[in-house]
Length: 78
Image 1 (cartoon, one colour):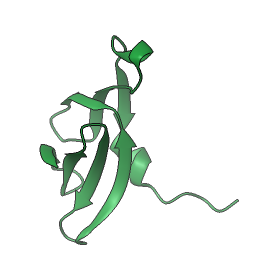
Image 2 (cartoon, helix red, strand yellow; image 1 turned 135 degrees about the horizontal axis):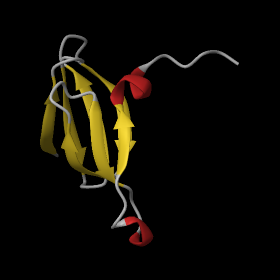
Image 3 (cartoon, helix red, strand yellow; image 1 turned 180 degrees about the vertical axis):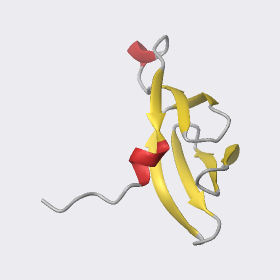
């Protein structure tokens, strides 16, 4: 496990687990509040947007932007 960055907005640390999976750990709650795949390339100043390289050999030159606020929002019931 390695530290990737701190999200000021979420009051959470983002850690890489095994190099391919990332977890968002909320310090106040003491638990994981989100998980996302990919290799972290960078983030915005408040730590809500993350640039990642998606997993897979065909995606090494691609960059995707992930909004962590969308990742941790409770999913609406269907």
